[in-house]
Image (cartoon, rainbow, N blue to C red; front, side, top):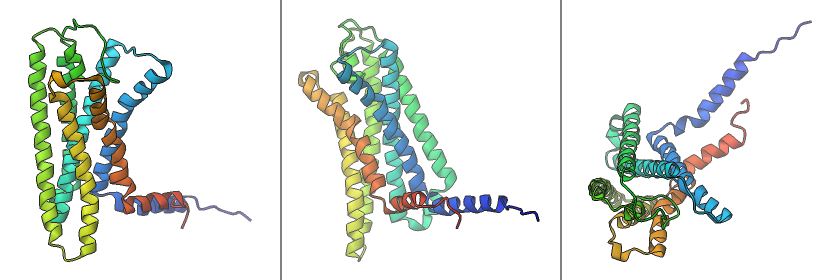
Length: 282
């Protein structure tokens, strides 16, 4: 007697289970959360491991090429994070204030285009800043008073008037950052107005508990970053520069997973299902 084992249906069943476990995560919010997670990981891995290496091996050396690469990737991920936070705020605004138009304004193609625009703009900004900064001659030594390569610290070492070109580019980038921040604040004002019209007290509490931490982290990120790049030289000190750099380069990427992901019940439930047998045959 010959026994046959049906392999193909089982494989199809497992594939269907995997799709059923994650189909509700195929939404614009989780798509942008994935992109934001990539920027957080990138910005952290660009600066923190090298800083730990400095502390453990008691060295402060970094090559010229390594410094340029670190600056490029740091600006790339930080800029992409700001643009993605702005897009995610728009996503929240549409879902709360214009729910009937959500599918039209934030379709899969529109989300892909917005994410691509965020990454492309971040790449262009970081490329221009890195090229301008490292085209300047350094005549005031080669010691940076920072745990990673940062534009203000590099400009302090330059003695060429060409640094005005980089300052102009910095002013443009700061205006772009302020524009994103104003858009975020305006969107949250509209969201809060819509939430206050909600008759459910529990719904209002949930909305405020979700939106206020987002706004607080974005405000910390933007305010400390702008102050770092605009503060006068008379206010510059090693301790102040280090504190400000940590506040805008390390703290927001470390808090984003806690605020956007770990507090999201739907995401935690999906991960829990994946870990407790989502790939088993049902």
